[in-house]
Length: 313
Image (cartoon, rainbow, N blue to C red; front, side, top):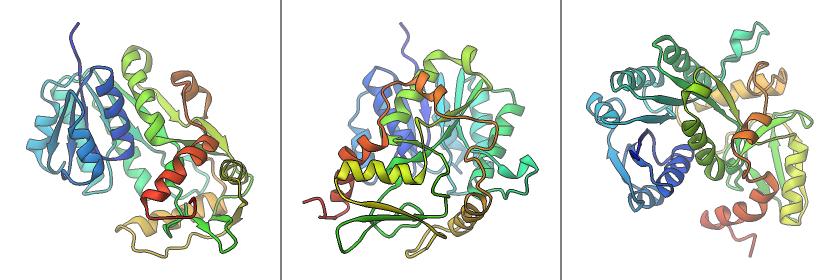
């Protein structure tokens, strides 16, 4: 049986690394691009069997050409490093030249297309533009729309998903979402890899042109806090309010956060837009997902400890 090769970009990101770990474990070859061989995740991936890492920028045509040489499949999650639309188009063109059999692209919606007065989120609309280009050039492609990462939560003062530790030992999450608005969630590190690998196994005959909401639970902010409270055995409160930026964030991210304030705080728009539902399809693809409560109990304290926090001791 021929072993297939999967091309992956931004390999140390949560989505890509999740797929690389799973694909390597079951015998696929992986060729993964990363910007630099630095950090714990890069070191981990280098030690995995059947994994070849290519260091370099996606703005380098030679890196992209090397990435797809001999590749059968691809999982592409572009980021805002550089011109995301130009990079996304270059990747799609190279994949088509290399005759990649199935191209899974991690996309997101452009809410402005629905005629509701909703703003486009800049870091999402660029992905949607790339998706449209992939469709236009006729690649056999599937588009996964990732829900909110459970792994975003931290007690560090990062905007939007700061689970703030209060003096009395309780936690408080403040965000612009309405307390009762259902939101899509997934544990990116635990569940993206198995789900995307199953999509690649099923192939384009089943999934070509399809959009898949990659989220395994629909929970309101109040329900998220209740799950954390049960898992950590301490009070966890949700407060609706505007996003506060207390630390330096990447260029372009303040505009994204302001759009989130408006789109979800003021308009209460559906997270993926009105055309895409979760979580039934994702659960059919991958049944072994990790719930929010399980994440909060088993993974959140570990991640916090690695960040230097001591509240769990």
